[in-house]
Length: 344
Image (cartoon, rainbow, N blue to C red; front, side, top):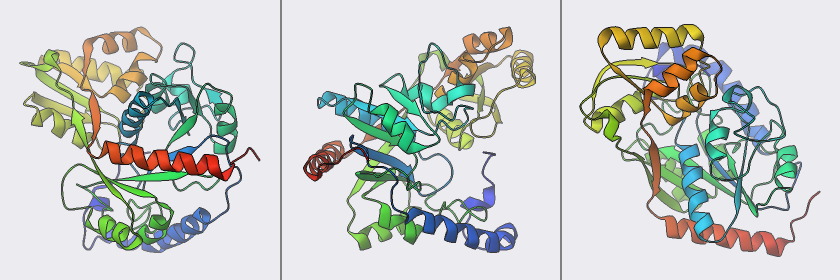
């Protein structure tokens, strides 16, 4: 996906959004109807979906990683299921970091595979069937909230408190994947990420449905290698500006930035330009973990060089109400067992 247009996130009148409104209404109608379809498959594994209402990043992958680590502490064996966006493989495919690269399975899949068995599949039911053959006892599905094909036992929907629903319009006039009031009926828990007042509408909708609300914060992890350096930051993620702002908030000296589209496939020309600009300006390169995965698994001397000479600013998702969330998951797992869920 290309970088989201600025007008998506600005309330009020926008000529571009107004011109796109007829297409957006049709898109929202179709998307809302699709969400009402009956699931094609009920997995024998409990399925916990981690999704969002809008196009773009809200921290789903860091949230999935943090939740998986906590569930492992509780004695569970979680696995991951995702589309593998940015990768060419349709799957179903069990990710092997020694065999697969980001061009094949996507950067998010390679990150998740560090924490548990990970399956990528364009068709979620077939992916669930493959996951059932792995040593896991529950599935964390990264994204797929709007996809009705696989039955979900619990849907955790993340909302960024700094951006909320943006201008409140559906794609392509705005960031919503379907009308918010149609999506909320499929959610089981609202997860508010960060601070700010932009999520008020989401909170209102959740309150009307009586949904539990959990708070979480994406915490950049300080990197000593960046201290005292003049930096050239680059990123190809959903919201590159958020990454740049995080660096500055930690007190690092960011002299230059370069934003690429989400899941950007770096070319030889991109790498040459980054290395040349950094060297000429005497700047150190820094990027995100997702971008680094793409660089490390790309082939060629230039990619090896930039990967070895670029620092990474890691992030961690802190879930404020983690015990409450785990209790909710435990109850859903109990219900799954009592329901006698079976493979169709």
